[in-house]
Length: 246
Ligand code: PEP
Image 1 (cartoon, rainbow, N blue to C red):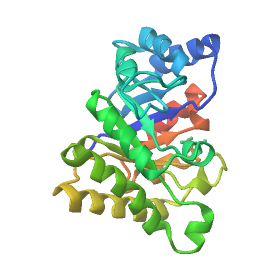
Image 2: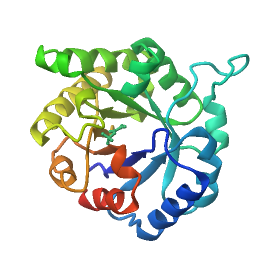
Image 3: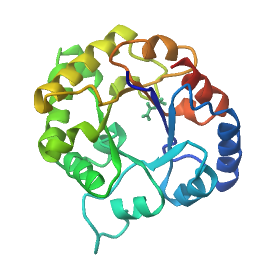
């Protein structure tokens, strides 16, 4: 039985003062028996999370990582630096990075490889656009995206977390239905199983307008092992209700 993992993606939100308030409320309300919890914050706040969350049972991570090990890459943050800040997780291939920063499947795969080599768990995001879904290309797209990562990380595949995030559901208030999510999650698990011989350890999260009202039904699906939560992770009450729904 895989324990549910609920991950907050704060995106480019927060301030020292607002984070302190949110972290205090999350620590006060967190129940480790319900689900594993992690927060992916903007890089400047990772040390604040480390100071606040160490020993709390809540993990933290980043929203992106460089594909390079280190050196002359102005503005980038390496996997080793994230480990230095106590990160356990890093999101790679979020659709906002694929869309606004033109990240390719191969670049995302390199980032996942770097993360694993540094001892981080990559949360690999895959997901189709609305035109992809309408053209019946959902399965093709998510399998292509995951395949690049599987080939890059090889036998470390069982260490990755996958997040199925339909692009049309992110930040729109229009979540995938539980049946739509389950169908894609089953495809992704089958792909992992075919590549590595087993996929029972991999947690496959759903992301895209998950909230306190729709979480329980999504999390009840056999292949939905948690959630990657954007908007609803910025308020302690909604984020904790999602964790409790698992
Ligand atoms: C996300 O940013 O990964 C996400 C799922 O956002 P939201 O929950 O706001 O749709």
